[in-house]
Image (cartoon, rainbow, N blue to C red):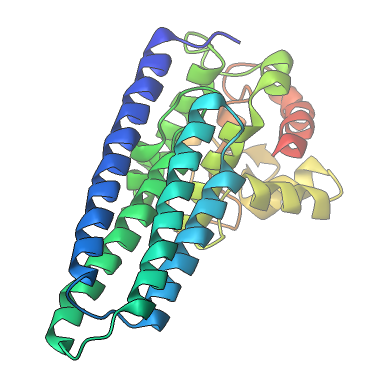
Length: 273
């Protein structure tokens, strides 16, 4: 699979951004440590911060493949978590009645949590396999711009497969398409549609329909009176049937190949999701 130079440059740029943010987080931790020298932070709040940081780091590990660059970033996040744990220990040793100083300390911890959360989100939006950054898709979905998000999804899929000229995937492309990118795209659609749209929703309906394309097509709203609905007639809103989006058949040949091949392509594509 051809990975374009622009994708690699995008990934490298994202990595540099992550490293800058990590440096900023470290600076924030240092400031918090200094504040702890003159005031008391409750141990229960500090432990909560450390636990949340650990959860966020585990989420990063679960969503990222083991490439050297990603492991380096994850290791730096682990170091941040360790520093937060040290803050807990330090806070338990400090005795002070200066309660007025606790508020800025807790605000600093809250800020660190927010930054860690944001960094974790950014990491999960960059595919280490293709180098694609899915921030734009996330933003479109977050704004409920379903049609724009669907078009963006199609653009990503054909770009990753180096099929921008053809604008659809053949059997070989489907087989080689990276599962990691499928997961990122699917997770975004699932999250911002509250579980109504996404590849895994389509896959479940496909299985429930016993791979009967007519039953499946009726349920997701792609078939109308036994005819495949044209892309221009798709329903780009939450009023659409469950699993209606993304409009997967658009990238597996709909409009470019014999319509009779759609069931065959669905049978190949959906099990990979």
